[in-house]
Image (cartoon, rainbow, N blue to C red; front, side, top):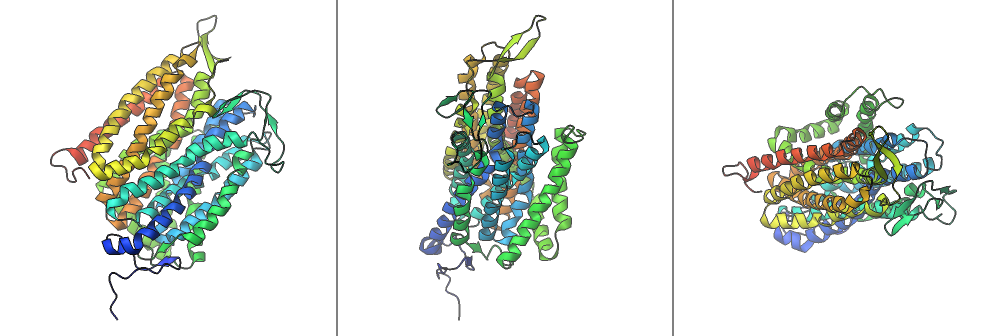
Length: 546
């Protein structure tokens, strides 16, 4: 019996064997309902992934406020470790959907977040524990960063090309609210005991804060809730992923049973930790590591090592699947769009990670010269703004405008939008650098804080809009078999911004030249502005205005 091309997909069962989103009648009768159901479940799961991945930016600030026995530089490493771990995890995650299925992958990777959430909660109750314990928890939190690549790859397979910008913008934009949610929720839950179930409190040595203002020194604080709080949402979300999402067999015909799929995911995710640990050991200073590598050497080595491990360690049908996905590296547009996505998402996640500690260090101290005229940065500023009160605003704006960027790009073209936001980011970065320079040389740095926050919000807004435009370009330039892996790959490389920004900003603050970090960002944005014009906007471009 011949198959009716307009037949509807059965609504029951997790596996869908017939999927034709470009078919208008199929989409309107059946596809739209299933696609949006998977999208609405994907968004909160991704949100929690971002929250667990990014939580060390807030935790490090509060560890400083509680008097944990670590230096500012050591606390900066926690956000950097979480950043590079999450970025490296995205490399295998970008291939998971086509190897294990969407429902299987999103369920298991969401459930995996329970481990770093609970482990972090336990570790934070023991300030006497060595630094490597907290660094291990930060490394483990990278699972949440990896989830973005698999989530975006999964959602891209459900929607027609004409809706790629909107659907991916919604998934990424609302998922990115995990950063804002984390920055709002963690300071709040640290003020409560969870009915006495989460252990004893600690006392703030330095004033802290939350979105409604400062929290004075001497206030009881349950910092362990920064990890434990996510268990309340992760358990029901994992169940929702399992019972509400689908595997598209047209995309993953050989995923195998759920158990086989889970083993594939666990195997590849475990492999991703190997290059991360090796690179961090070579990069981080003693006593944690050897301190042999420069950051700009360490990151390419980490990426190459992760790809090599995947290529060599894959076996059987998995090896063939990985080899097929590696075909994206032969396409020059994979590399151009990777650079453009670093501009947008790399900036968003990097600034999200670095902003709380940057506010604390630059505006939390009076920068005054000593008797010899040497500028000192140790005198506490009584008028300092609280990082936990303001740091959430930038990520909130960036995430909120991301779906708008996708929608506008669907209407006018992704590359046009990318060009405009790149120009805005060049200007804003130079301006932020100048304001930081003024604040870091002032005895009253708080007078520069409104200008600093306003410009940072502009940077976040531009990066958010650009996220949507880049996704739209990927969905148009690449066919359905390659768009998902390309999205995963570009997001993996861009996620190294979560490592680069905290390290670069921290190093330049320590050197007394914080402005140089942002001048460097501006130079990169300008180069990518030219790249975008050459590849996609100039007359005679191979693919003009996708």
